[in-house]
Length: 216
Image (cartoon, rainbow, N blue to C red; front, top):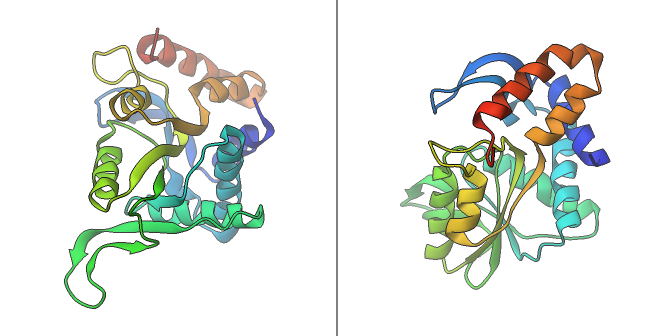
């Protein structure tokens, strides 16, 4: 596990963004853990999260022109990434969408940098069913942009429905774009395995991966 992945997971634990217990997901599955990026709710927390995203992106060497944050959670996340990249010397343009098109003032559905003719990287927290990513890709294409990848915080690495592939793998296959994650269930298991205070959670995570993990 890389240093920025460990720092991200430990920060998520400290911020209560990553919790353990029994959580009913939209799929109806009972998960032993839950991730809520909304808990990164201060300047320092968002700065640390943005840095983790930026390190993941830089390590992947993915070419892009514009960062796109889908409303609503993606907006502060993409903004945090843009600020973190600026600190690294990369001044990346930023755009995001409204949930409903505005019919007064400047109008329209999009705010920020133009997308036409640009390679657009989507920034979000997680991919569950992939619905939000599909909507973002449609918005980008309608604006004349080219989706070039998706950057998320946590990859649950579990198959969607009765299929053997994960939601992230489905997005990769359907749209032909890379999906980058700061960390996934594999890294979370590594962290839990190395900490005595997480020993009980480690067993629950292993059991969950065995039951629902993609490719298993």
